[in-house]
Image (cartoon, rainbow, N blue to C red; front, side, top):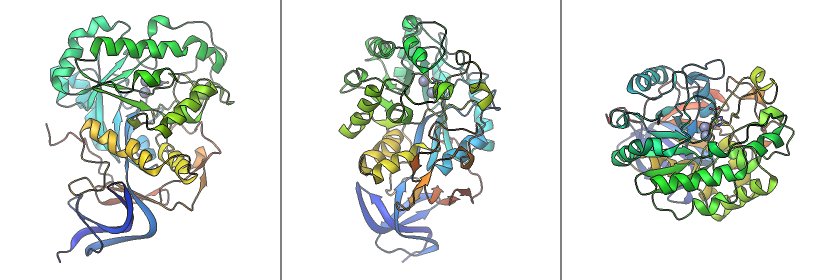
Length: 425
Ligand code: DOR
Ligand code: ZN
Ligand code: ZN
């Protein structure tokens, strides 16, 4: 039998089932799956889970422009250590990623710094040149509500043409669904005030509006769904996929997070948080994505009203979900579908599955090993986490395209992150 370059053996998640077998890898791709395989390099993980690594379809790595908060090196190291080998970065950087020049600049930066593979979103504004961006962007991002950055488009009518151009391009339009016209602007002192200014109805209204205006014209992806009433709006709609962020099914406004829990859409009431968790159990949402949005501790310690919105989470997303799998609150198959399979499928990248022809991106778990989340042990530049003290199961090892990149929480492999669209252009 021909020897493979790399063989990984363990309890592997293949076609929805765990089975003890070997994964053969050549040129970074999975080329064989069998009970036994010979390899020049063999990694044995007896008794450990071998899962497809996660694709995080929503991160803010802040590079260029806000590298005091994060940059592509620290963000991608944080991703890797949390089992994420591919990220899609949002366009609200400085400059914003809204034309070919800024997209290519960011691509250069990410290509020289990223430890994980990446795709770059382009922002949509009136006048965005969709045709030129669509070949090099992983998708388009529309902000219907104001938040970090300057990409707000409060009026969908102003981008009718851009939306139909996105539809023609076949790319995804990811939407931050909060209706800016309904936002209260009262001074905020705490998370209750923040929620009052951005009530649940902002989200449901924005989802309805974007479906009404763009539903038939292009593929919509509703980011960070956070209210109970949004669930029926994002279910069973053709051409529409939905996403939920860990902070919306694990945290609510009742925690003592202060401005460290200030995020858009806001942490809501306990009923909404519970509804998001129950919906996950019931099969709702295509994707779990972190919406990793780091800000510095100093920024978050400003007056509540002035502090920026956003929480980090790219490194803790998979470990927190795996803890819930371990505790039997969530099923492994549902977790893998939303963390790995669906995001890869929706955005068209050959990742997220252990199958021949797919990238050999893998994460290995010892489910007996529970850790307590501590910001000090995480790798984001921001230096804090809203999940401090919670239990989690971190990956024991992470492979990117067949290369061992992380072992027991430390980087061991050389950087080789690249644009997932490179070579397709
Ligand atoms: O809270 C948020 N922070 N929501 C967003 O939509 C953007 C993000 C950021 O970039 O800080
Ligand atoms: Zn958003
Ligand atoms: Zn975001």
